[in-house]
Image (cartoon, rainbow, N blue to C red; front, side, top):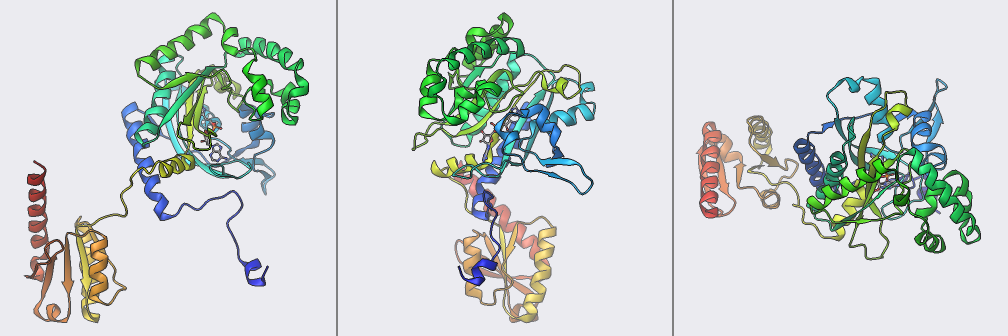
Amino acid sequence: MSKKKKNRIQLVKGMKDILPDEQLYWNIIRKKIDNFARNYGFFRIDTPIVEFTNLFKRTVGEDTDVVSKEMYSFVSQGGDKLSLRPENTASIVRSYIEHGMLNLPQPVKLFYVGPQFRHDNPQAGRYRQFWQFGFEAIGDNDPIIDAQLIAISYYLLKELGLDIEVQVNSVGDVNSRNEYIKVLKKYYQDNKKFLCKDCNLRFNKNTLRLLDCKNKKCQELGNDAPQMVDYLSEEGKEHFMSVLEYLDELDIKYTLNPKIVRGLDYYTRTAWEIFDCSSKDGKLNALGGGGRYDDLVESLGGRPTPAVGFAVGIERVVMKMQEAKVPVSKGRGCDIYVAQLGVEARKKSIRLFEELRANGFSVSENMSKKGLKDQLESADKKRAKYTLIMGQKEISDDTILIRDMESGVQEIVDYKKIKMEIKKRLDKHLAKNLKLKK
Ligand code: HAM
C-alpha cells in the first residue's frame, strides 16, 4: 500500500455515510413517522446516546448477544462504566421513571428517531452504527394497544411502498415462560448433538434463542420443538387471542410464527417482527420488531407498569425502498432563480436574494457562476418558474429582467416593484395550474 493511501483516514468499519441522494428517502421516512405520531398521539423523546452499562445489562440482559458481544462499552475519565446505547427502549423506560411520567395520564406514548450502536458483523443492511425509529406506549395493559402498535409498524412501512408481512407470537409471562423453557430444554437435551456450536453455548443461559438460530440443522430441530402458545396461562392466551382478533379487524397481513422469541430479554407476551416479502435472496432480514415488556419498568425500580413498543431499522427500510424503486422527488424545486452578470450586479443580487428569501419567496441561486448560460441551466434543473436577471444595463436603469422559464419570454420591470411583480406572476401561475387540474 502506498504511503499516501496508508495516511488517508477512512470510514470506520461498519459505519455508513448517508449522502444527499439517499437523504431523499430519509426525508420521506421522517415525514411519515411525524405524520403517524401526530395521528396516533405519540410525542417525540430524545435520550442521550451514552448510558450506564448496567442499564442495558439489567434490561436487555447480560446473556444476550447484544450485551455480551456487541456493546461499545468504556470507562469514562471519571471512572463510570458507560456504553453507547445498543437500542432505545431501556433508555426510554429509565427516562419515564426518572421524570415521574407515571404521574401523567397513561399510557404515555413516545416516539424516537436516532442512532444505535452494535459491534455486529457488518454486511448488507447490518451496520455498527444504525438508525432506528420506534414507538413506545407505557402504562397500559389492553391488547388493543398491542394491536395498534403492530398496526403503526405495519401501515407505516406499507405506506412507504414496501411489501411486508408481520410475524407474531406470544412469549408469555415470566411464570408460563419458565415452565415452557423447562420443556424446551428437555426437547433440545435429547438432540444436543445436532445443535451448532453457538446453540450449545446458548443452551443453558438463553434456551429460547435456540428457536431462532439461522443454522439449517438447528432450524430443522426448531420446526418440531414444543411451542410457547401451548404453555400460555389462561389470561395470556386470552390476551393473545384478542390481539389477533384486532389484527383481523384491521386487515393486517400476519402469520403466526412460534419461533419469534426476539433477541432481548425484556419481552413478555406479544412479540412480533416485520419482514420484507420481496427479499430476492430468500433471506428475510427483519425490518423491525417489538413486543410487550410488562416487567421492565419494575425491574428498573419503578412501580409495576405494563408497556409495549417496537423499533424499525431505517437503513434497512431505505435499502428496501431503493430495491422496490419507490419514487422519490429529485432535488428541491424553487419559484424564483436569481441570476447575475458583472461585479456590481453580483453585489446587488446577493442582497436581493436575501430580501426575497426573508420575505418568504422560494428562491435559489448559483452566485459563484459567472456566465448566464450556466445560471439558466441551473435554474432549469431547479425547475424555477421565473428567473430574475440582472446585468450592467439593469443596474444603470434600476430595472431587472423577469424570464418566464416555460415560455422563455423576458420582460423588463422596475427594480423597486420587483416583489409585487413576482407575486402577481406567481398568483397567475397558480390560478392557471388550478384551472388545468379542474
Ligand atoms: P431489535 O429487533 O433489536 O429491537 O431491532 C429493531 C430493528 O433494528 C431490527 O429489526 C433491524 O431492522 C434494526 N437493526 C438491528 N440491528 C441492526 C444493525 N446492526 N444494523 C442495521 N439495522 C439493525 C429493538 O431494538 C427493540 N428496542 C425494539 C423494541 C422497542 N421493543 C420494544 N420497543
